[in-house]
Length: 248
Image (cartoon, rainbow, N blue to C red; front, side, top):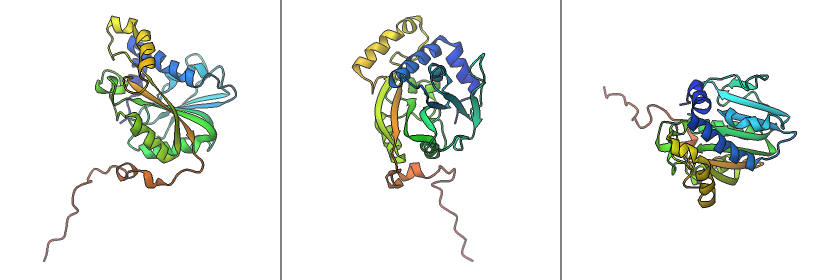
């Protein structure tokens, strides 16, 4: 279930912990993609905290927000580039996106495979995407005081396997949010120190979020590698035996 856009906006723009998280994740994004000149950049979920560095460089930047979450106008003081859309039906041309960012989209989706299919469709053959999800092994996924405490957290292996099965080949990964998810003054003031230490010690286990960069595999692999539980949609009555007619 998607979080409400008002709650996401309040966290990232009105709390010090949210602004700290925004800086940490955006810093990793800029390291992965320092140059986006002439490119089309697309975000899905709630990615506006990460997209600002691309506004002055990329040819086009668009922020898609799923219907169940809601949409907010962005950026402030400039022409709006936020678009409300169906989760698995984007108003984007096939093979047209050079850089794709997904945050607060995959872990809260009720149709993750259909969502990844849409990511695969819009990504250009030479394009790259980054998926940002709560780290199952990190502290942030175990507490619901931040948006990363909601939805399904992933291990690096789980996320990489699911992406590869769709045809989104993992190339690089990184971590972020190495400080505890606390608004205590000490942790907020030393947040950059913990980010620096965390990146040197581990970019896989300790961070609160995982960032996995992918490229598009053409043609897409067959779907035989997807587990049955992932490929088929969840049904409320799964596991209940179908009723049989009573003998007359």
